[in-house]
Image 1 (tube, rainbow, N blue to C red):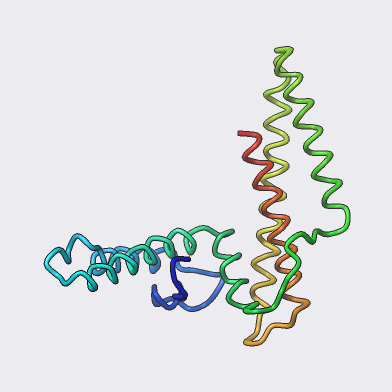
Image 2: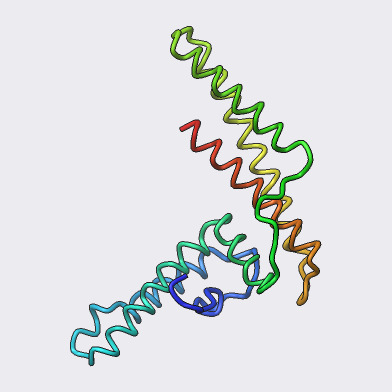
Length: 178
């Protein structure tokens, strides 16, 4: 974040995991026009600098709020405030599951090098498996955020953080699959 600005407030949206994509898009278009530095070429230098900072916040806020994972991580930072969360925590068995999937992916890569033709089916099956896992983790994330109150407890915040940690692992695995 380029400043301490709250992106939800900036876009006039409720602080929530659920974001109305049309409202976000409309607010982005409006704010982009209002804050774009090119429209302030005759303004004093300080006003131009402020517009540039605000425009950067608008662009960064839009990038964060339109992406589920980025939005979840940002919202968690807002909710946690100064509370320190374990950004490496994972559920029991998750890391072993990731190692197994990595090994499967390596085996598929070796099969592809031998050009047996079976690799396409294996790779697609694995992709579907990981996509289903991401969908399940994101559904859990949505349910967790739905239970958040004005002052969420550290246990809930850590559970959300652990869920986000899983999402990151799964997304990296998807990226590796190409």
